[in-house]
Each structure stands twice: as C-alpha cells, then as structure tokens.
Image 1 (cartoon, protein in one colour):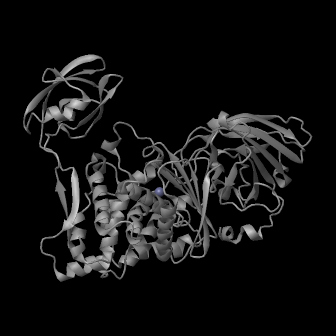
Image 2 (tube, rainbow, N blue to C red):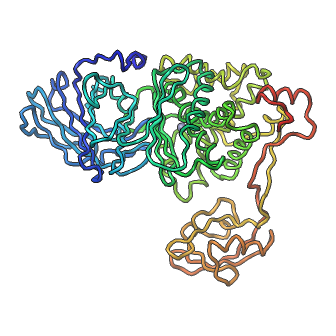
Length: 595
Ligand SMILES: [Zn+2]
C-alpha cells in the first residue's frame, strides 16, 4: 500500500499493462461514455474470463448498482472476431476467451447524474468515478492499469493519476483501487495551480457563479497548512481539488490525493455560505488521512461487490465533521464565536431529532447501507446520522481529554496516534483498537462513556464537559407557537402531511404521513397558513383537524402543548473561575473575554 507514494509523474516507467482502457465521448450530449478495454497476458490463461462492475464506491456507503448504467456490451479477439459471453448476475459477465491472447471489450455507460459519486457527461464536460465506469477482472485488482481519454477537441483532462510519457491523455494506475480513487474531469474547466509546503496543488472548477478563485486559493492554503501541522506533513506528492458549481448541489467525496466537491454556484458571497463551503473543503481534505489512510478494518481492503460493514464511521465521518469546524477556526476563517455557534447549531440539529433516542451511534454506522442514504418520511423518528452525533461525541471527547490534561493533550493526539499506528502503514483498525487509543490518550477508562454515548442512547451531557471551560449550553424557544408536531407541504395543490414527530400531539391524535390536511376548527388551512393559525391558540388548547386518511374523511381532536426548545447556544457561565478561563484559553487560544 505504501507503493502509491513511490510513483511520481516524472519518474514513471510503467510496465506494459495487462489492462488498458480507452474512454471516448464522441457525442457528449448523448450522455454516453464509450469504453474500450483491452485485456492481455496472464489474465487470459483461464477461460471463461470474469468481468464485474462495482456496486458501490468507497466514501459513499450505499449499493448504487452502477451496472444499471451499462449498455451495448460486446467482446472480440485481436482479429475482431466476436467472442461469446453471458451475464451471470446483475454486475457479472463471463467471456468465453478460449485461446485468445488478447481480448477487446466494448461497452457504453450512460452518465447523466451530476453528483460526486456518479458520472456526468454532457456538452459542457465529462466527469467520472472509476467504480461507476470500469469493469474489472476479479482476482486481478492488483494489476497495473492504463487509461487513455479521448476527449472532444479543446477539452482538457484533469486527474491525479500520473501521465504515461509520450502518450497523449494517457494515465497510469498501479491497481484498480487507485483507478477507483482517482476521478476524472474532462472539459474546458478552469485550472488553477498553487503550491503549499513545497507541494503542487491544482484546483479545477467546472461551472460559473460568484466564486472568487483567488480567495479560494488563499483559504485552501490555510486549511492545507493547518491540517498538515496536525498530522506532521502531507502524505502525497501532489493534490487535486475538483469543484463543480451547479444550481443547488452540495456534497463532497474524498480520495487519497484528490477530492470532488459540488457546491451552489452562487454560494460564495454570504459569509454563512462561504463558511459552509470552507467546512466542506476542510472535511474532504481531512479525509485524506481519516478514512482514506486511517481506515476501519472493514474498509482495509474494499469489497466492491457488496456492503462493507463497520460500526466505526462515527469516527471516520463524525470526527472528520468535528474537525471541519475546528480546522477553519484554527485557520482563522471562523472567529471563536463562529466556531462555538457552528457547534451549537449542530447541537440544535441533534437535540431536535427524535431518532437520537432510538438508534445508537454505532448502529447508525453499521446500518448506513440501508438507512442513512435511504431516508424516508419517518427517518427522523428512528435514526440518527453518524456524521451529526459522531461529531458531537468527538467534541465531548476533545473536551474530556483537554480538561483532564490541562490542554496538554487533545483529540489531535488521538488523530496523530491513529495516523502513526494505522494510517501510515494502512492497517485497518478495529473498534476496540480505536477505543484503546482514545483511552490511552485520555489516560482513563472510557468504557462507561462508550457504553452510554456510542453504543447506548443516553443524551449527550454537554454541560458536564463545557463547564470546566467556563461554558454552558442554553436551550431557547425562539417561537412561542404551541406545539403540534407535524410538517405539511403543498403537493399538486393538496396539503400533505410529510412528517409526524414521535411523541407529538399530532401523533397522539392519529395524524399520519401522507394524510391530506383540510381544515383547522372547520376552516380550510394550507401549509403556508398552519403555523400562523396555531398562534391563535395556547398550550393546553384543543383544536379540531379535518383530513383525508387513505381517502377517508376524518376529524381528530388535538391538544396542543408548550413549544419545545428549538435553538441551542453555547454561552459563558456567569462567574467564571481563573481555572475555567485558563482552560478556555488553552483550548481556543484566545482570551475568554472574546466570547
Ligand atoms: Zn465525509
């Protein structure tokens, strides 16, 4: 696994690869990538030859069935004679290669999904992820691979893979994992080159909007520098940021030496949105250590054929999410209030989701394959995101370690230790090994902590951990409207109930998802009006709602209750002690009175 860093563009002398791909896009507006695959050498020693397509891509834990976009497959030998093949499962083909010394496989991939984990091809650009584009030969994932891109005239190609000398638009991947880990952007994108800590970096931007690339590069450099300090250096030769600007997209996908980002094209002017973008950058960049190299055991060797189960995504994603707030603060992009507000906002999110009392954090990670990426109307009632709760558990662990060691130790030391023991050698860690390292840095048993907050359902004790730093959490109710507990939206001119919160008056009264709301106390009510109409009542009042449930007309009596906290803030305690101030200053590196 460490060989990856030995391959440099300037020293590359690849052996003749046994797997060569060509990716054409003669009619980009058709959304069809045209792939040719040439197979030769020892892969052909046995017949039939198996070819499969991944069902998921690392970093996005859902079986996406990439093979459903494949069409027009045909196979021939070096003379152009067709070879027989058959499909043996949804993503698995068998080719009667017989005594052929060279096989050509032709297929096309429909690419019209603009996200960081899929493929997109149109008249403006092409973007692909290897897992969603390339067939591979099971058992030969470690064989070197060569890829040649055949772009339309005037389009350029950006990827982190090294180029093969003297061959136009031809790239080399040491193995299939590396190919999957190296997305391609092909088009007329703008390309910015910059250097940080002596290493070359590139930013490729597809799409227009109100982005200011110079400002981005300045802030990217700050983030790279701060993260490099945390992990004591940058473990790559060069790094590529791919940025897609679209109407309202948001997302990122991490890779070892690059990342793909998608963001709202006009999301760069307001400071709130700009900060959100820089969190996204800090997050995906942090992943180059945490999850790309520091990997849970289940992700040490990727199985592209099926789900790869782990309870540790709370650390891989949640801790990374905590650091996507910490890093911009250290980089000077947030101030201290911005940092604490960002955390308080996440606390508000967690504390207003009923599913936090139903699904333990470790289980959220394990079940990501069937839940997190497959949200439905009821989801907030029975599940919790390992990003969200994971980042807040990481926050508490950071405070716990800092308080116990007077800020001489912190979660940073956990990250560094994980990097040294598991990341650098790329050995997968078990949940027990992760817990042991956290305990060794904290220098205390955390069995109870993990039982309650990782494997159990206890509410997170924010104040207990904030208090030593002179801080406390306050819960506010910003809106005095009595509580009903359902969400309604207009759909095709009808007022449809989209969510009914567990334990709410709406649930108690029997309202259900998909019911059509008609009237409140006999008067028609729309989703736009509902909130305002409820203001005419007070907690304890009973109202009558009229609605259709499965086409049956119904009435129900609902007793409204008091509004619940919907806004949390982290504020200073009223009379901080000198010790509390010292703790605060040691943690955040600024005077307590800045708060
Ligand atoms: Zn992530």
